[in-house]
Length: 231
Image (cartoon, rainbow, N blue to C red; front, side, top):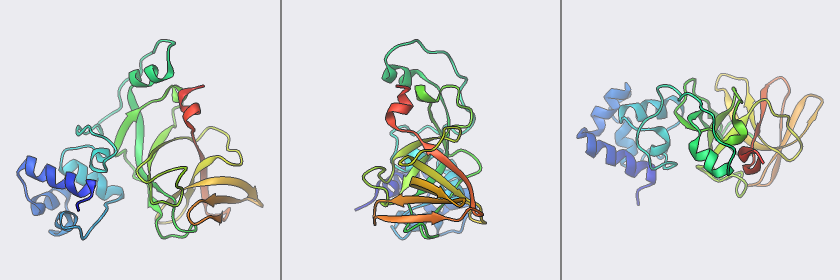
């Protein structure tokens, strides 16, 4: 049975009346790149490859991932902000502009090792609505969660909003950014800093993960629903 990702790539190929090789050529990839997706040999596409695939098929990346039913790509520029009335938070959320950038995916990983880590994109793969709790937060961004290591707190495909300026407390969900050639990025549950090292937890398998101080370039808070709604 096809995955959502696989089905949507096939759907766009039919709608654009192009084949797998045409799409791969648009991406500047090898002739078999999109063919491997369609046949199920390649089950996911990440980082810049996801951006290029979405552009080649003229859709948004989160539609390809099954995180949205809206096909239209919104990666050109954010909308201008506008003031919203003081009313119900859910109503406000529906009225706010799509000006929060989505920079790829954060992985739960396996025991914090390199396996399963994710490389952030330099450019947004999409833009999403700005929740009331992030109005005025210039550095806010969003990511999609990969794999099951943070279930049930964060499921694969979940969109999480991140506020780099918020203080991080023990028990908070966080994005841990690692400085290396791959620019690894993880989503974890923060516990404490110990001699500069960052100690976190993951749920599946339940484990403690320690990131060395000389490799960590950022620990950013993932906002809860209440924080996103500004309540």
